Structure formats: C-alpha cells, structure tokens
Amino acid sequence: MSSTSIIEINQNSIEHNINFLRNHFGKNVKISSVVKGNAYGHGVEVIVPIIQSCEINHFSVFSSCEARCVHKVINRSNKMMIMGFIADEDFEWVIENDIEFYISDLYRAEKALNISQKLKKKALIHIDIETRMDMVRIGIMQYGFWPSKETLIHYIHNRKEKKDPLKRAINWKSKVMSIKIIKQGEFIGYGNNFLALSDMKIVVIPVGYSDGFSRSLSNQGIVLINGKRVSIIGIVDMNMIIANVSKLPKVKINDEVVLVGKQGSQNLSVASFEQLSNQVNYELLTRLPQNIERIKTI
Image (cartoon, rainbow, N blue to C red):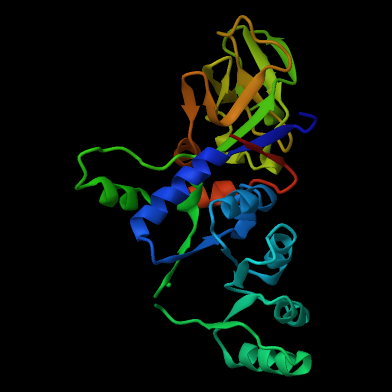
C-alpha cells in the first residue's frame, strides 16, 4: 500500500446481498443497480464489474458526469439510466450512446427532441412519475447497509431469526506512520486540545478529514490496531489522526490500522461512525474521496 489508506471491497459480500434482494423481489422483476455517488463510496471501477458478474445489466446514476465514469467500465450490451442532471452539452453524448434518462420538465423534453432530430436517433427517455412497475432500483442495500434502522426492524420483526441478512462489503485500512512517547502534562495535536494526564504511547496515522475521517471524531473516534480498539485523541487533522496505544506493547511502524471493517475478532461498523459523528451511513460512505485506492477482495 503506497497510498495513505486503502479501501477493500469484498466481492462475495456484494454477491450475497444481490442474491438476497433478487430472492426477495422474485424472478420477473428487473433490477437496476444504483451506482451514483461513486457507487456509494465503494468505487465505480470496482463495483460495476462485480455487479455485472451477478447478471445485472442495468445501472442508474444521477448525472451525465457520473454516466461518463460508468460508461468507461460498463459492458456495452448493458443499459444505463440518468436519474437527474444532464448538462446541456452532454445531451448529444447521452443520446448517441443509447443512455436512458429521466424527463421531468418541458425544457428537457424539448432539448432531447431537438438533439434526437439532429442525430436522427431515438432518445431513450423515462417519464418521471411516482410508480419504480416491473423494475426495482437497488441502492445502499446492495452494499450491505439498510436505508434506516426502521427498515431493518420491519424486515426482521416477524422472522424467527433476528439477524441482519446483509453483509458489509467495505473495509477501510491504513498503517501506523510513527510512534511517540508523550510525557504527563504535555499537549497533543493542534490547538492544545488534549492534555496527557499520564505518560502515554501514541501513534500517528496518515488519515484525516481530507480522507473522509470526520473532524467531529476528534477525541472520540475509534480505530483497530493489533486486534484491539484504541481511542483517537486530539483533533482530527486534515491529513492525520493520533491514537492512544499505551496498552499495546507490541505495536510497531507499518502495523495495519482498520478505520472501518474487521480486524481479528473486532469490528468497526459504519454505524459506529454514524453514532459518534452524527453522519448517516450514506453521508460517510459517499464522502470517501475518489482518490483513495479501491481494490477487490474475495
């Protein structure tokens, strides 16, 4: 890992979730996989091939900009739909490439008609009315997350097994950058925000709020190191966080740090971030920067 952190996407988890949803919907329902927001932060370039391998051949995005990103990795025999914004200069590209799109006002209808006549090619439009008929869009659930706690509770309420049937696909990892000994009475981090009340051993981790690790987790976040939960102390910096590892005698530079996911018997869920940072899972996931490397695991 040459970057400061890496995101692992588990293919088996995605396949499990899609099979669960497909069985729930039934055989005759067409599925459109929603991959807006960089596939809910999971990475379009990794997610789209995995979902295509699950025999899903329709994808939904919000904008023409997102459509261009998906178009680079989607099989040409598969379909894509734009549910929201299309830049005026992109209408011709959208129609030329047989991309479906919503029509919700006369301006867009006239724009689509003019470009269609110019290209002498049909525009593949959807009329935007409240009715999702013989096709279902699947969003955050395909990645292993429920839209809300209430949705999960409703699902398991009348079932014997009170267990979440979905599997999280994402693991976010970094490494220990440096180790320091702090003396009692010394301040840690920017702004003299944390005072060491005793001698401490700390580690610096090269991830901060510019990487999607919320600044609101200052002095209250948790990460996993050496299979143990350790606390974030001090302010979450733009590029770094500091963790208290006084109880980890064997910690060393380059040890794995798990920000989201599993390490040994411990697990840090996105929900735990939600509780501490007041961010919903949608928000935390889609704020993960696109420049963090995503890789597929099995």
